[in-house]
Length: 310
View 1 (cartoon, rainbow, N blue to C red):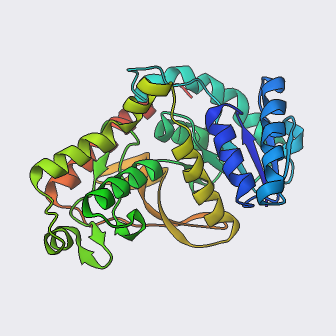
View 2 (cartoon, rainbow, N blue to C red; view 1 turned 90 degrees about the vertical axis):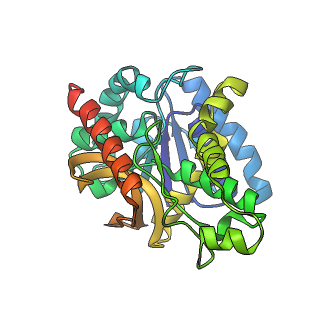
């Protein structure tokens, strides 16, 4: 599958590097308003390809996106230290108003994969701007938060995070909800598994994991200015589900008709992702506190999205 990436900064180039070396894309085109940056990133990535795959990598302009099955939108301004994702809203909204029309002028029916923050609101805005079915405008959402959640729980239990089945839902940001009540290790309830292996999930442990998941981006940004490797790998996971029509269950963001009593809001839920985009929404079983937190997250995002003049 031919994949386009608009925005050749750290997120876009990290996704491009991962797509290329894993061979997930047959052809990869990087587009950026800074043409020299796009060329440099494409050249650098292409020099890694002979060691790992046969992906064709090049820089181009919007016209070169023609024929792409998926276009990753990774353009926008970076998050500043101490700045919340929601504070990025106004700064990134104008960027997307410019690029969505240019993408659709050459790729009339793509799957758009939104990676720019605040991703839920940008996803909702992109859906409005594009006129595409919501199932074809997918935000990376909480796929990275879910990976962080699973990684930290796996570290505590001393098992592979791939054996942890747990999701973060709602906003990709401060109001996100760690769905502890439905979490599993293998096929076993998480609390039961933890007790069996002698690593109980006390309130202190849960609070520590919740804090570390919720604040991971701020810690990374404070140390090196931006996060990009984790989300780059997450974007590849979504693209692979689309390219191979996997029907994979992934925590991604999409404009949703109704969730937790809130209508027409983009946020993350576990969703089935395949060749046509999102094919089903899965509403997890949440305890009352988690359900209330999800409702509050949805209401916050709805209010902000509705205030955006798009």
